[in-house]
Image (cartoon, rainbow, N blue to C red; front, side, top):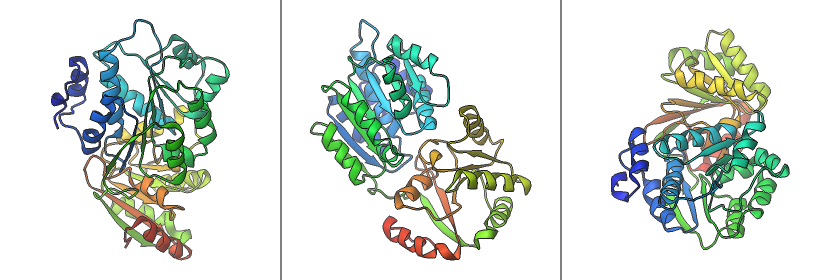
Length: 366
């Protein structure tokens, strides 16, 4: 449906038009009317389907239609990674350009003081990673007494990364009377348990296949000896790959080694993982986004934090450990109804793991 048909505030519609959006995507069509009604909600959808706008648009409409006289934090969005928090905040900034709604991103790897000032000032929307938010809560820099909306974005990834204790502590400190919106690409048992504990009679929205990769992605494998993967990948990147390529490695050391090896073979490659500083991570992502680096080598810290248009290929340098990891990784391509390609490099000793992955994901890799 057209955004114009949703009865949104003219200032919000101006921000939507600035972003070049005309019509809602399926997850937005399903979520926005329910979120506008004030009900709690669980949304399970393939990655790259527009979940961020699905919760931001009704949130902003509510705040514009019911302004507060005093500065206070009215919404909290929890995200698993710094990259995702930054990208959500960027979208907030775009949508609120014609309004007076304020926001702040709160994540690790950067100084706490500017974040603390924003939190104490009572910005309308806080977008935060759980660990850094807990740091601020320990310093009593956070006041959520007026909180109206909580969003848990990529909830399955947050729990995969070990944030469950922090998430539970944060949620227990929030007002009980609030709207809670939970978004996830997969729904493992821990996420369902969280919904039972903290959501009230939630409505459920399912878009696409539950827990599976997007239908717009093609899947392929290449059998290659473990010690020959870097050279094979370099040849493929040089002669066959078209467009930006995101390569996932299992470990930080492995990502550093592969990026260095590719660079030595004449392939411009940047690297991003948890041990890189925030400026280094931002520089790598922006270099990849701009085309300075046609290849970005990453660990799974980036599997949920990258929303970059036009990623042509996702390469699994090793067979992923879990079906959820495969879905999250390949979801960086084939986004917004465009087509994408996923390639997995398989050493002989990884064939058994590959077959188990095919069965769990429900996709024939060949």
